[in-house]
View 1: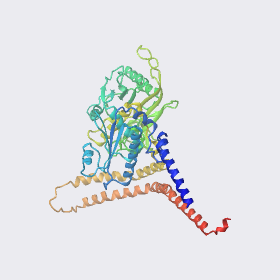
View 2: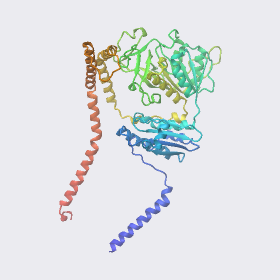
View 3: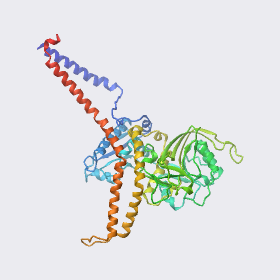
Length: 563
């Protein structure tokens, strides 16, 4: 009886001490949070906090995450939970300046209506965000995608920055070409997103109101204008430059490489003015071999410039390289495959590129730079001679701006330009938020094997793909669509039947080639997954078995054996 009373009193004292600690001391302890999630979903990187400290009035975030649609896959649902955790981390770090609302819109409900009204994507069920702030237009992220998880913090921070600074940023445009109608869709997009100031091609200075400049084909600009660009960059201005050895935008122009090479060398980079990139892997079949369609694999997926992009098309592009003694950092944004080469423009269509190195078509340049005009120009005193840090993005192609209006390629190319300019013009608190490179777990061995497999497939499939394209074209010519009334008679024409068999057989052969080329890759991927998944359950089973053996032996040992 006494032992029970003593145990009850002990438990009561422990309970009182626990309550006293929570009521008095717990509130005085620092707010410590331990994030054990693999992608650190419950915490923010230090670079995000300066942006949140700029909030001087509350804003509201409405996260629409449909939980019931059958179209939403398991991985997408899991990603929705990680996005929710990240948004809660933003709300917690904002100290009351962000009001987060988690909404699971039921079909035909008021929430469903609101999500559609604000233009959220419902292709696989809602997984989007709406941000509002008093006196400002609402901002949205139409849909979050697991493919962009490494950019999740930047994506949310970008929306918050847009609510903080809704006015369009100022961008300067300086072109050595007459862009014409082919670039008109891009020009319309630039005017829609930015306060675009077009400078005269003979300008000898960049106005102080312009902090970010878009420069197109500077080979055709005069020396005073290039000097103005030189001083602008060294003075801290950010630059997006499009330059290539052979531009279709102005085929009549005769470029002078001598004026520009010194400027590039001052930034620590070089581009051959008489070579174009030919790539047998990324070449567009129906166009010139130097016309390339760059897929996601050719892009730097961890850079904001390729945000939401799947393809970019270039034509007659050059190749950028870092000078040996340069101290700049060259970060590739767009690259050719290893099945590429630099050739003279006249030989680009007559030679097949052999396996070699990847060529950089677009790159971000950061680091120390020097002036290409140490003595100034035209009797003017020398200006800035060097800078400890410049920020320039160079694209070795101007035809990227010249795509057919309304085409998907034009939309992708325009998005690359808009992404890059938006990042260059963004305030420092936003540009300091870097993508999480550690989110992508692709092994280097796997990447190498994928490249080898892609090349092996391309080597064998090229002829079959050309035959399939020709067969499909001939099939469409001989079998035009007709209006059917009720049932339709099957055409037994011998030539049509042969074409139909060929167009159905060739995709089967291509699929078989693809399976064979990627067999080793898929086998390694499966082994890696097993290596990651199996050990944890196996370890738990081993621990359970060891505990069972220990308890079994303890029970079976006579009591006197422990004396």
